[in-house]
Length: 314
Image 1: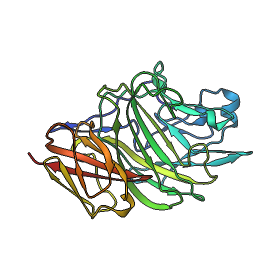
Image 2 (image 1 turned 180 degrees about the horizontal axis):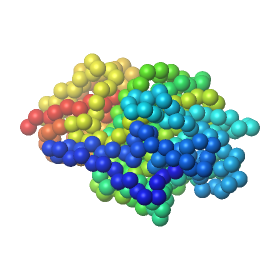
Image 3 (image 1 turned 90 degrees about the vertical axis):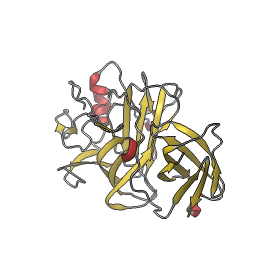
Image 4 (image 1 turned 45 degrees about the vertical axis):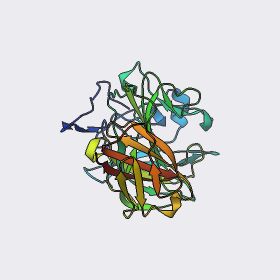
């Protein structure tokens, strides 16, 4: 449950770069929400949904405080739990949960009229980062999503995404156990140049509405970052990018991205300046103008994503 007195996110600006902290990003602070056990401050669960006492009482407690942490003293642990014939995914949000006995009708949303269930945000970060562990059953996978938006919005968005400004999503590798704290870093994809008003998170320990019972995940140190600190360590360390005017040369491009992948080039304001298919080791950036400066290149194929930060000289 979120505090009734809003804790403003901390922004640090230095040399034109920023690193904005999420509310209670390390899950260090917990409070009595009238549930089975405490909820992390500024986060909420299916036990404090808008569905009323009957559903909230029947819903399992799919989260708990964990002393296995990346930093500080705690992290949050999410677990998929079976109740009768339904498996409830471990879910946590900084907005509010709309719960239903039919899992397909559930979602999380920003309540713009109640500070308890929204997080104001007016910056455009480059990427979403954090640390996680994952212990799946079968081919299950967890995920974390971050949505920058104006007005009301929800995840998943069933009918209308016109309020979406930027979106980032990290999916864990299906069926892969991650037993040591591992960092993820994923860029925001921006849909337009609007300034967002709110930030909505949802993190899970299972695959959407088809999670597998007893998969569990731990999360810690969630952050929005920009500028030089936006994209950190990535897999595929041998993959390099060289720039020659508006031509990019991809060296040691992993075979998983061939014969065809998609890529996006972001400037340091988080704006996409080029999008297209990658079918070879060279890309001609037909942007209509000369590019120079620091950029982020994000290439994806299926659930595999690699990001690289590089410089295009004048």
